[in-house]
Length: 291
Image (cartoon, rainbow, N blue to C red):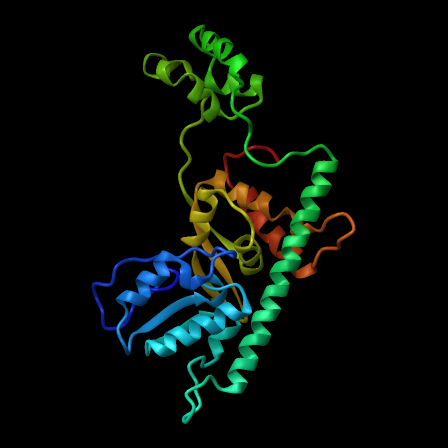
């Protein structure tokens, strides 16, 4: 069992699978899955985390978690990121308190990580406002209006495909299927221009893109693809090997558009380069909509 579902508690081969998502407003010690991990762990076990900010967000959160792990006599192993080179369990031999140097480094790195997330959040909001000013609207397409449902059902029975109705009413195909759900079994053959189901593909996502997406609000399918990615070390950085259908890759690419810079906010060259690397890999997927 691990704090992020990627490794296991030592000496306990039957540890239950646990995956903990990061919720900035919720203290890690208040998350049910993390409390389950602490309940299951025994003194001498090691909790493995892929990267510290997969578990905690704020400065005080880190210190609180370290205190609980120390009280329960649990070791902490962090595999990636700035904290991976530190021994966070170092305590004063007499007082048992966290060494002042370790505490200082934890607070400094946590503050730097918090600043980075705040800046990324501001860039995201600036990008959304700029897109809104140009007439673009994010989020899911609307459902079929109640006043149009009857017309949609009639058109479907007359032979119009789900894809064509979705284009006509500017909604998703799922919204059309919902409107004609009770008609689908007898008319499934009508949807002639519906594409074949997409098969999952694996792409390497640059670490700077993955770091940004981890702090962004995502749809459940996008978050699942990101959380299930496999970290591959690349010198001082890393890439996240993400396996999902091309449509989700394209959605993730759209999510990190602010890394190219927004009006009044210049892009960070390294982040912009990372996004374009991911864009080149996503664009090579076929078939896919024209961007």
